[in-house]
Image (cartoon, rainbow, N blue to C red):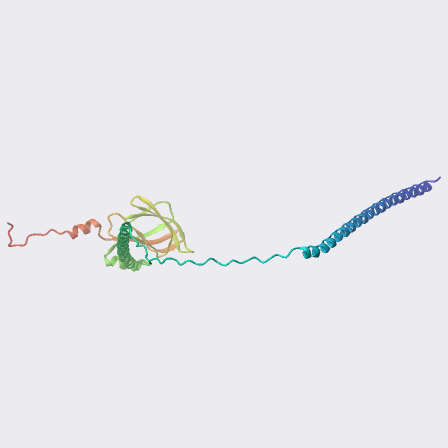
Length: 280
């Protein structure tokens, strides 16, 4: 036999085996379906039998019910007895018990009235105190705002206006020209050090020595007054920058002309005795 014949013979054998396997599977599935169908038929038959038995029981019960109702004795209506005669109630006098007031309640009421009066007085005092504090605060705010307005009106925006302030003679004026540096430069009563000058936003950062303490001012705007309070000064010192360049600022410091000690000495003059009068 040639090779082709062997190949064809093998293919036929495989096909026959596959058909045999398929046929056996189909036969087993058919047998399973037949058995399940037989089981369903048996269960349906059982259900029908149970339904028939139940229907017969219901019919027997419905037939027996009218016979029992016909043979049952009729119930007699209950006898109603007359109510016993009412007895006349003995007339009683309409007397109400007297309510005796407890003296302790009066004492409690008087104490509550005293507490309420004391609370009212305390509320009035608190409201009066609040009004006084508010008035005092308003007066202080008015004085501070007026002082600031007067000092703000004296801000010089250039060298010519600084000269005009000097001519008034009310305050000492110290002009400064600072370059960016970590070193401090003495200007009048303060020591200043420029740390940053922003020409775009027109503000600067400044470090100062105030009473031997370092004080930093950041993002201070052009022409914005900086107030510094020093010991011995009757009014705060004013610092104003009126020109901002790249890493460079110009401005001035304004301080009161007289110190607290000078004002105290001037306010207490010596009084001499008038001529022609003799002391006893």
